[in-house]
Image 1 (tube, rainbow, N blue to C red):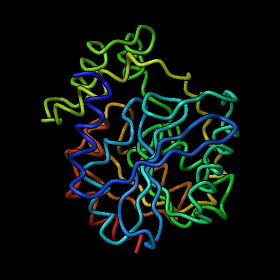
Image 2 (tube, rainbow, N blue to C red; image 1 turned 45 degrees about the vertical axis):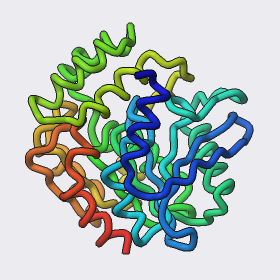
Image 3 (cartoon, helix red, strand yellow; image 1 turned 180 degrees about the vertical axis):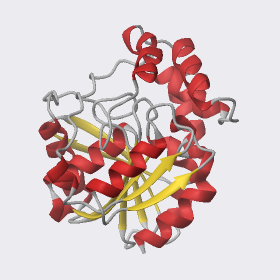
Length: 273
């Protein structure tokens, strides 16, 4: 199937009515897939690089039972958001874009949850715009408390320098270490690698002082190849002492979020409520 067909196929598995919203601002058009009661407390979901918003198919419908869930396609990545205007070049540009998204949705303050690159965006946004973030949840965050492991970066380089479906799928299978990742998740990520998109904004890790201003819920994948889970947990405890850390012993970085909903959802529901 094509990228668009695979995107729709995964979106159809949300097992809930999905409202497909398009918001326009100075950066272009942002696609938001929404579910849940219109008057429910808002939750914003930000995917990892190359994953796109349908990847939340195991999480969004469950959160949508009590919340209004907004899963966003990043303006600097594959998906249905189109950067047809100003190019985001800095973290500050991405924060402006996310503020525009919240304004376009009519949301003054929301719970924000991100995975991987999305967790970096969620965290830095909470630091920059604390009045807009009610609760903050990070799923195996990268470039937040620790940098990426060198072996992980080296293994990812071929799929970043010369993106292709085959290279991306190979990399994801390597990182997930034999776990039964959903075939449509792999297919969408592989096809996303071949889609034209605006280059993602280079991450800048928050300072230790900034990390002390947040107290997020953090899920740590015990088998993640992107960083050392023990060291990440120690850094969170040291720098954000109010944080709640939930270890996911069998998870890898890229088996999240779709494969571990039974562990993610109850904790997110408890935290957001």
